[in-house]
Length: 398
View: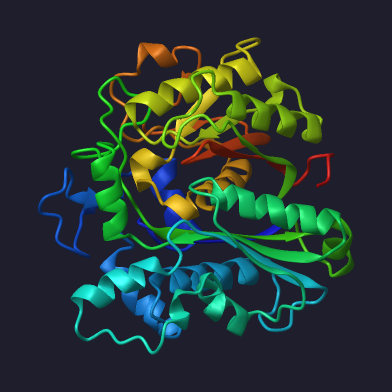
């Protein structure tokens, strides 16, 4: 059961700001202000707006890692929306968080900002990402940081769901967080994968991805625990899967085998048929090779009868928030299930004919009944995570 959601993104703080941006195709990426982009192939990215810093400062203690602060703010919203009291969450509780860079950007800033001081080296330990979350939420169960590439937000949610199913915890705070990093700019420049202006997933003119930042958090609970405390489900996690194709460090296998496997597993777990999936929230980074492979894999997994799969990527609006991406997309999926609206491909102008097997939602989105959503995420090295979410009224518990 998904009982709470929280978000920090280039659209602003809070899940409402996130939904308002993606549901009507607003592009939230813009000029990089965090560091000098001279010498890079792009000068745009997705930054949490400076206008949100006052709210962040008021709500979250200081910490060397912005990612840790984003995660804490998103967690606070998720716990609040679940009607739980921070620090006194009833039942055995665990935290499961994913990230790509972790606290690594702290070192980058330390090399250039003479005002930044970091005592010792313990800040670099991966668990420091959870410092502020663990101060705010009373955790008596597992505390896990997952680092499996850009599919990691989905992997963390899967790990949390597995812990609930196994009886390890009754409540799980789970998701992912990332801070915009100069190193990521350098890496994707070397891979010739940065877009010069905006990311255009599934578009003929797509030129690459744009790095971004933020945090997305879900509160998951067992159905029994939610009912016992009088909680309210916002959605149900019907299925979750992770897979890997072990094909290439930066490209998926041409047949998209891992995507097909992950989606098929989610269908099997959920008891849904392919035709019951109302929306696929795709990974869709805007890179020339990946999007076509993903489109074909979605078609292989879900077919085209009775209709082509309805697909959009949020990365034209938000950029690629890396460790936060799959978690933010899960937050949007919960919103879509409740709103009866499918976000569009915000920057789509000319759909790639290679993606003709899927129904690409136009930039302004589409109003339609939404009862089941599949969300897919890729990671460098061939990792894939997939989640299947259903409306709270669904008859399949997770």
